[in-house]
Length: 308
Ligand code: NCD
Image (cartoon, rainbow, N blue to C red):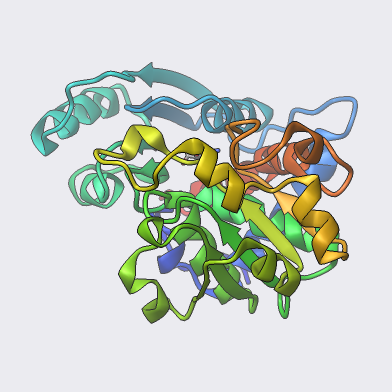
């Protein structure tokens, strides 16, 4: 394969399994590069990238920025966490201003689902979605599947349960698409109120009991309860949530098998996962962060190679 089938990375939904494998093989190369004493390569010299973050982010923003610097791109950053950019027009104006400065690629996080798709139709630049509302977070899903491949040899045939707030999670949706395209089986687990009604139409099964879900899986991906996206109460109390859905030593003892434990971060220690388990040897949370840089380097490198 010599190039990706897409010109933007708006969602995993648009990628073919071949695209994903191509990104992973390229990330393998960059992972080797970032572990060298001299970590920088000139691959994106003369490419200018704007990071537009209209919503809070720590990991994703730093990871993209580090990946860009390792590739020798020129980088400009724009953060507007509490931005009033709610209307498409304002968003396009902002971006057009930045593009007037000859930006080749835009990495954007935005609270509105579909913001990246909209932008890709309006401006002449490569768009990478770094999270759009509760819709998709494609680079997170790529780094998650890449991390499973690294730990378990391959993604195909693996059983992955995504636990927690599925309803508000862009990580969940992108992971479902990526895992299925790579041949894994996906289950979701959490309080009924946090599981979208349409989920089974995506070929995903539902298990409300955490212990049963863990017994079934090879990998558990624990999600944060996204209180900031909730306008009503979806479960009685945090204590009740912890009681039924927290990943802790107690429930892991009951399942009596080794599973791989993942979390996209930020972790609410003591809520969806205990510190003891988050810091245990079966948890690959920091490996996910490390892989994130290599995977993002691969995505930007492959998309930049399509710029005419
Ligand atoms: C996630 C996000 O922002 O979608 N975090 C991340 O990008 N690593 C998940 C979350 O906020 O819980």
